Image 1 (cartoon, one colour):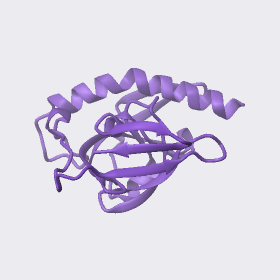
Image 2 (tube, helix red, strand yellow):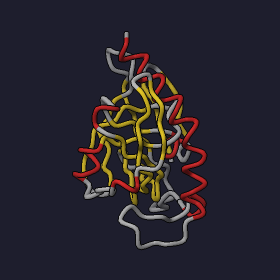
Image 3 (tube, helix red, strand yellow):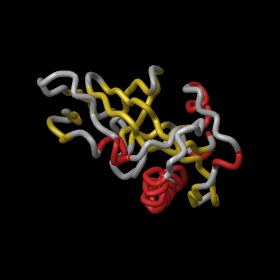
Image 4 (spheres, one colour):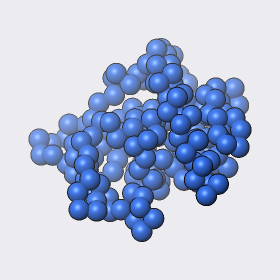
Amino acid sequence: MRSILVFAALMLVVAAVAPQLLHRLGTETNGSSTTGSATAANATAEPETSQPRTASVPRGANGHFETDAMVDGRRLGFMIDTGATVVALRQQEAARLGIHPATREYTAKVTTANGVIMGAPVELSRVELGGIVVRNVAALVLPDEALAQNLLGMSFMSRVHWQYQGGRLILEQ
């Protein structure tokens, strides 16, 4: 029960911090940062074909939608979380992608039931789920102890059409 409360508190904080994060990513002009800085307004889905691309994610026994996605060419596990404003990555998983934010880059304050946790705003060049590809996706890197698993939040989900149908989450682009 405590982990559910911690998770819920974390998501509320991410929802509060994310608009500021997205605004900051949208106003940065220095593209030389390790974490990237292209604006969310420039983020577009990849128009590779005229056919709609779809992905189907079954609801797990725990009621959550868990899936693997390719992030910048690496496979990572995610829980789809429409309550999370941005994609949230565990620090260890971000390191697998070559993302190593410096201590000074942990500027986003995330308040949980366990206290304040600092997150590092980053931008993911490419997130692919099935045949769906979204570029320039805002994300936060959080300490491993703050997050049980990576979250595929609305910085990805808002850029695809999705619906719940027959025990599955159907995504279309």
